[in-house]
Amino acid sequence: VFQKRKDGSVNFYRNWADYKYGFGNQLGEYWLGNDALHLLTKDATCTLRVDLETLNGVKGYSKFTNFNISSESGGYRMSYTSYSGTAGDSFLYHKGIKFSTYDKDNDLSSGSCAKSYSGAWWYRSCHRSNLNGLYGGKSGKHMQWKWRNGNVEYMRKTKMMIKC
Image 1 (cartoon, rainbow, N blue to C red):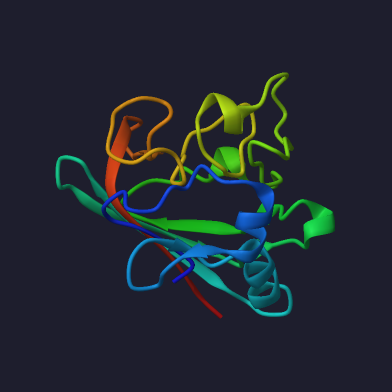
Image 2 (cartoon, rainbow, N blue to C red):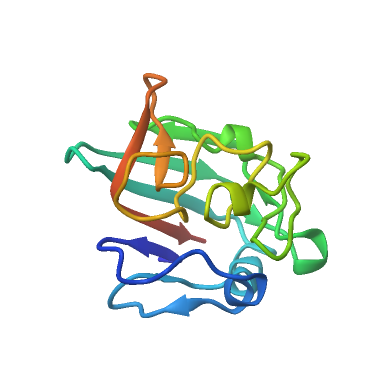
């Protein structure tokens, strides 16, 4: 498990260094760290599974094969080859994009998506998913995933897991 959100006890609006090295506690909410993600995925064939639970209690999952995170010099760019699952491919918009934080703007927008949406993510211009956004509300700044039916759903719980 490299990302877990469940109760809002950990602030995910953090800087590049925090996301590089990781933060939080594995018993609660946390981010493993982008350096660790790169090391796990660079020489292995990995599958990412994202488990989601909406504020309304609806559960779903998305799986991504050949999931990879590039090195820091590559901007921790996220890639994968295929999707399956019940929650929709909300990563498609973010595929091939570098990671951004409020102090390291790698998105394709003229502004800073990380600042505008109070998170850190593989923002393009800006997002279809934002699982490191603010906890527990219903705005573009909050944890969200564009569901299979095209609706944006706001999240109560998320878990991102890698199997290599």
